[in-house]
Length: 255
Length: 267
Ligand SMILES: Nc1ncnc2c1ncn2[C@@H]1O[C@H](COP(=O)(O)OP(=O)(O)OP(=O)(O)O)[C@@H](O)[C@H]1O
Ligand SMILES: [Mg+2]
Image (cartoon, chains in turn orange, green):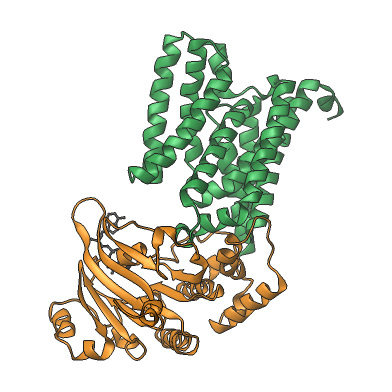
C-alpha cells in the first residue's frame, strides 16, 4: 500500500478492466494508473481499444470486469464531471447546418452544468473570450461553427474542454485534420497547460513523432496493455521497435 | 377575411392549430438536428394502431392512441439503447409493426369508415372547445419542459458523446424528447391527420434551419413557420375550398422552398 501522499497523487486508476461490446474482448485485464501531472500518450493500432479505454474512464461504457476510480471514487459515484475536459474522436462530425456560433459551442458544457434558465455572467463571458484567444479563435467567436474548417472546429472543441478549468483533459486523436503548423502550436499549448497549470493530460494519438517532445508517460494498447512506462524508457524499449516492426503505424503518416 | 373569422369553428381551428403547430415545430428543431426526423413518422404509425384499438374496444379512441403512442416512445428509447439498434432502424421496426397491427385491428373493428378516415386525413375544422383547451395546456407543458432543460438539450443534440461524458442523464433526456414527440403527434393528428402529422414536425424545422444563425433563432423561426402554415393553410382552404390538412402542409413546403432560396442568396 502506498502512502497517503502517493494515493492522492493518483488521479485515475484503471484496475483489471476488461470490456466487450458483445463478442470477444476489446480490452483485456488492463491496469493503468494515471497520476496528477502526467502527460500520458495512449498508443496502439486501429481497433486496439484506445477509444474504448477512454470511454470506460469517462463512465460512458461500463467495464465487463474490473473497475475504474477517479479521484478515489468509483466512476459510477463520481459527480464532479465538470473537472474533466473531453475532446471525443470525430467531434467534428456534427450537422454543418447546426445553428450555433463558436462562442455558443464553447459555452455548451458550462451552461449545461448550471441550473435551468442560467445566462452567462460577465465573468463567464470574459473567461470564454480568454480561452478563445488562447486557441486562436477570438476573431471567429460569432461565426457559425459549421462554417469553420475542420482544424478550426477541432480547436473549438479543445476550447470547450478547457473552459471549465479541468484537472484532467482527455483528448482522443485531437489533431486529426489539423495542419502541421497548428499541430505544433497545439502541442505547445497542451504542454503549457500540463507544465504551467499542472493539468493532467491523456492523449490518444498515432503521432508520437510530434508529441514526443512533450509527453511524460506512454501506454501501448493491443487489447491488453502491451506497454506502460515513462517516455524515456519507451524510447529505449523493445516495445517501440516491436510495434513499428509489426507494421503498426505509430509514427505520423506525414514524414 | 372578416367572414373567415366570424365562424366559431374556424376560430377554434386557428387557435388550436397554431398552438399545436408551434409545439411540433419547436420540438422538430431538436429532432431534425439529432437526425431523428423520421421519429414522427414512426410514432404516427403506432398512433394509428392505438386508434384502431380504441375503435375496436369502443372507448375514447384518442385517449387509447395517446397511451399507446407514449408507450411506443418509451419502447423506442429502450430499443435504441438496449438492443443497440440504430435510430432509424428502431423507428422502422416499430412503425411497420404499428401499421400492420393497426390494419388488423381496424379490420377486426370493421371501422374502415368515415371515423377512421377523419383520423387519417385530419379534421381540424371539427375541433371541439375541449380540444382547444387541451392543446393550450399541452403546448404550455412542452414549452416548460423544453425551456427548463434548454441548455442540456442543446448540448445533447449537438454532441451526444461529450454530453454523456459530462455526466448529463442522456437516456432520461432522450426519453423526455421522445415522449414529447409522441404527445405532439397525437395532438397534431387532429390538425392534419396521421398521414401528414410528421410534416408538422419536420417541415417548419427544416425551413428554419436553412436560415437560422443561432439556436434561439432557429426555435423562433420554426415556431413561426409552423403557426404561419396553419393560418395561411386554413385561409387558403377557406378561400379556394381545399382540404385543410393538405393546404397547411403545402404552405409549410412553400415556406421551406422560400427559406432554401433565401439561403442560396445569403451565401
Ligand atoms: N460501438 C461498438 N460496437 C461494437 N464494436 C465496437 C464498437 N466500438 C468499437 N468496437 C470495436 O472495438 C474494437 C476497439 O475499438 P476502439 O474504437 O476502442 O479502437 P481504437 O483503438 O480507438 O481505434 P482507432 O485508432 O481506429 O480510433 C474495434 O475492433 C471495434 O471494431
Ligand atoms: Mg479511437
